[in-house]
Length: 285
Image (cartoon, rainbow, N blue to C red; front, side, top):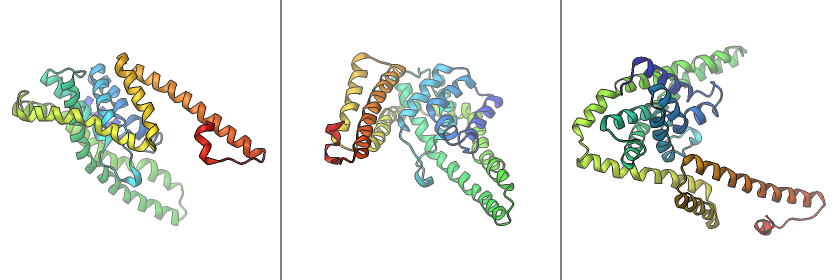
């Protein structure tokens, strides 16, 4: 597998689009195009191997499933993971002759994602630093009452930041990925200590993503019950990712309806002049 300049350029454009709130909003950009699960499909289409792209993207998504950027603080750049890490991981799997669905393939993919994601923080903060210049121009325009200039500040000038810190790095790293992967393959044989360590560490990375997610979701011990039930159900029935998503969606709808019934009961009680004892919320629901 090789990556042409055209393919690398397309991946670079998606790296820009996935991190620009002005291009469709954060929900479409960062939290959709920038997620490894979606980027895996995009990379698979661009590189001509959809199955491998989706499998690699799904493996990386588990690691970063609960990653957020509170206050602009980011521990790993998912944009780099998606449009640099996934293509390089696909190249590495192809070079080593590993299947993206195998344990070794998943471990290698997550390791590549973690490596690129950490390095990508430099690109993230580089983009934010350059954007400060455009913000200064925007404030000057506001002070002068030139509000039309804000369209340029919001929609035009940020492209310079993202071309410098997203497009060009993704273009170069994806295009030069083949020689880099070949050099890694030569220096680190499959049966060597380094690769065995890589596989071991990579296989543990999804646990980090799940742990971060549980830390955000679990508020009390009883919240673990749905998680363990879903894990047991998936493991015992041998469900794949799509089946698990459908089952989880149905349970989410049921839970949402139960919560809404409780909320409506509270509203009805308040409307009738009654009082609600917060200690009995769980029993009422």
